[in-house]
Structure formats: structure tokens, C-alpha cells
Length: 256
Image 1 (cartoon, rainbow, N blue to C red):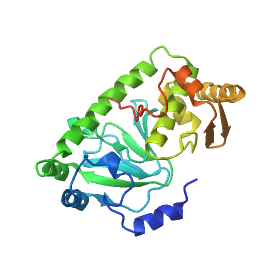
Image 2 (cartoon, helix red, strand yellow):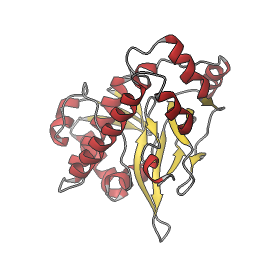
Image 3 (cartoon, rainbow, N blue to C red):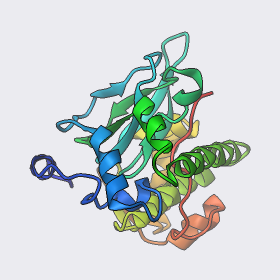
């Protein structure tokens, strides 16, 4: 489990884009040190957020994008009846708020799931930098393209798939995303609750819990509180209809 003191000490070191171990996920390939300094100069870094803190609320004016540095964040919207609908989970290196570029306001609320550090990138200043930094505009287009791809993947997942297929695909996606960050693809903590997973997958909480129990009985995984260990990723991939954990899958669903 990630220790709060570890994040605080990391922030005290004033780590920047040059020293960040997630820079390969955020920055364009081949960007020069001088251009990294330009980008670093507009990035806002705050003290750690804690569970329940909000990066922004549904309906807020769009200010900028957020990059998760450590921890995790969920994205959700509330319908007219005030019911919460989870539409995405974000891990280190993933960018939040891209969908707000079009409308000028955030369509969802971004809520912190655990002690989290995040970088805020003001969009107006980022747009200005795209004129000076080769490859930055292409990087933004690539990220937006990935969002369209992810939305298509989520529609397919929630189509006519069974509960087992949805849960398996979700776990394999998390495994893949941890793998791409150099973390363990087989053992990690689930920062989101069963209710949040259920809301994201369009299932009842009891159904998610029963599916986890069935997978455990089949020795596909082991679960102890928040910790999960995937014992047979290939079998889970087959159930979920996905590729291996080497492939980066869905990173978040957006509400349009």
C-alpha cells in the first residue's frame, strides 16, 4: 500500500517533468530539455489530495487538464435525480478532463479515491505552447484519439456481455495499465469500492461480489480486502475477450 509520507516527501523534493518517472507517458517523443522546461513552467503541483477531495465538479468552467502522478481518481456524473454514475477510473500517468475541451466545462466530477498527487496543466497556456513545441499538438491529438478509442471499447464491453465478461475485462484492463507503468500486473490494490466498480460496469453490487467469489473459487484470482492477485491473467483475458496484459486497454469512460 502506498504510504502517505512517501508522497509528501516526493512533493517536497519538487520533482519536475524532467525527473518524473511518468514523463514518457505524458510528453511527446523526442522533446528537448529546453521545451520540457517550458512545459514544466506552466504545471501546477499541489500538496497531496485525500480520498473524497475533488479536482473539479460537474459543471465547473474548464480550466485545464490534470495528470495523475500517484494514487487514483474516479470520474462520475450525477443525473437529474442526483444518482451517481461512475464513468472512469484514472491511474498514474493518465490525463483527466480532455472531454471538457469541447464544451468549455467539465461534464463530470473528478473525485480522489486515495491519497493522490496530481499535476494541473492550464489549457490556455498549454495551447500557446503548442505553437512553440514541435510534437505537443500531435501528442494532444493522440490523447484525444485514445479517448475516442476507449469510448468505443466501453460501448462494446457494456453491449451484451455477461457479468463475468465485464468484470474479467475490467481486471485485465487494470493489469495492463499497471504493467505499462512498470508496476506489477498480477498484484495491486483496488482503490475503488465494489459499489463503484458495479456502477462503472453497469452491474449490481451483489453481482460484482458474486463474480469475484466465483473467480476466486476457480483459482483465477485471490482477493483480500483491497488487495487483489491475478493468478491466471490469460484465462481472465479469454473470458473478457481481450489481449494480453502487454496491451494498454481502456483508461476511462466519458459521459457525452
